[in-house]
Image (cartoon, rainbow, N blue to C red; front, side):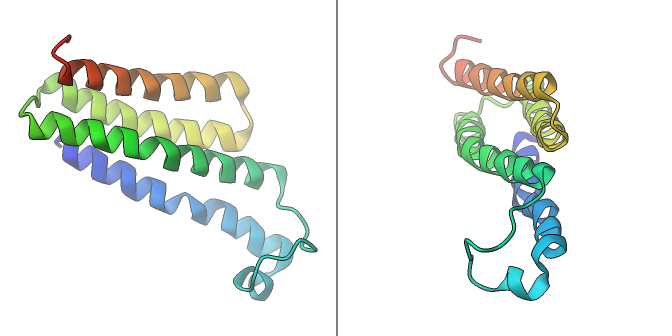
Amino acid sequence: MTEIHWMAATGLMTALFWMVYVSNRFAVIGIPASLGNPNPEHKPLSDWAQRATAAHQNAMENFPIFAALVLGVVALNLSSSLTITLSMLYFFARLAHFVVYTLGIPVARTLTFALGWVVQVVLALVILGVV
């Protein structure tokens, strides 16, 4: 797979994360209420679903940075085994981040986030010609 493939896989994965916490919303307030307008009177989601929501938000905030860097690598014809491996690593770091954040494992959450951040930094350094 190329960097673009890993970017597409990461985008698809991020686009599907909502399904995890919406399933809890269905269980907590029911499907009809879930399909209606938000209501402050609704019961809050379970703790794990609130963490999944936050993890999804974090993934959405970081995806544009990753996508811009991958597109930069491809546009500048800098693709290499390093950039492909980094792109794959980003996918798995973000998947692991979502899982451990949802499960409430704080140190693992920080480490998986940091791994994704390091990937972004190294991709930027490749574009800047430092690596």
